[in-house]
Image 1 (tube, helix red, strand yellow):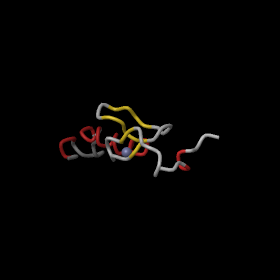
Image 2: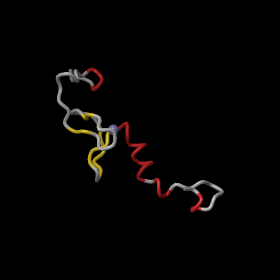
Image 3: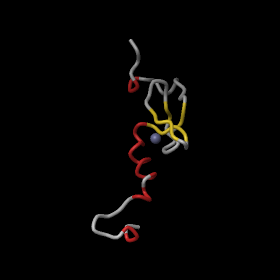
Image 4: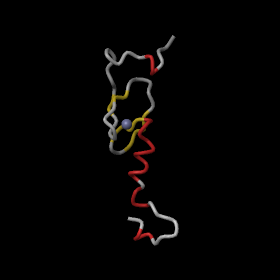
Length: 68
Ligand SMILES: [Zn+2]
């Protein structure tokens, strides 16, 4: 039976990648997103997307230049 990610022994298994956002280790079989900056782990996608879209963030009821 294939080992599940949470049952892996991270003391002996080597990561294949590092997340470009949190620098966390990414192991074989784990999900990640292949972005221009490098691999982004599954858990960081929301934070990464918020950072990427920060320039488009607006506050409803405010002029765009006031959103800061
Ligand atoms: Zn990450």
